[in-house]
Length: 348
Image 1 (tube, rainbow, N blue to C red):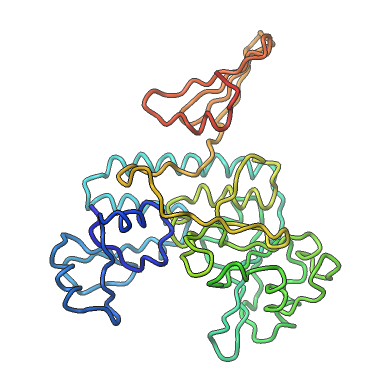
Image 2 (cartoon, one colour):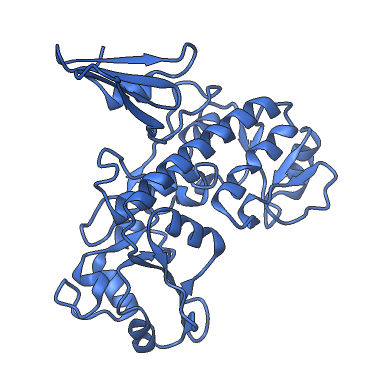
């Protein structure tokens, strides 16, 4: 049971925020400027205090260091660590195994049709003097990029202090993923991107390859509040690497999975909107349904018959009788049938 929640402003989960709205949980007093006496009373009333990656001297706290692990699946497997404290190892293992299966299935689809587009993850550090322009080569971003069919841009110099040198370095990059922090994402437009990095002209007539192909992306496609809220990239993308991979695949080659609705990546050239998740929840105790699309494991046809075939997914089978133009979905008993219904709304 969650009793107290810290930094509510930056939490995107509608169900977590609904806990507070419904009076089922309270804000935890901050260790920096909060009511120290009340905070001590709050901590004394709970069995465990879940922290971030850094150690905490409080005997009730444990560090949750998922973001420090180097790979996409490494980070996701921390759900099994978390489960240890709640005797939910079996359930966590099942969830993780399904995440890995979907991730690898989507990865195989991307590898069969590799685009080999060069992808640069960039940011502006304007809180430093002088301002720095960064090209990130983090291990998990490299893995995501490669598994999506792209190539991570890894120049010998990754930190720049002048815009001209920075733009020269990324001039031949196919895809830009701008990670720069913008609190009010209504201000994170193509125009502000161009101003920030010195891109001119700010359209497809630019000499920069990623501008010509209109491939400037941001990672703030889902937030709790457009102006001041949290960015879900720092929350849900960690336990759902399979969905991150789908987002990247869709950005590099949307034909691989055209029905995928991206969660975090949004195209700035196309002025794609930020989705704001409301603080509503039908059941605060229910497990949230994964955003991942089911991935076909194998498609098979009859040995001799010509008019039927079957596609196997993780928890259901999609069967087509071409002779009578009918479709059938056979899902495993006890599993969630909604993903199959969404993918094949006309099937029986």
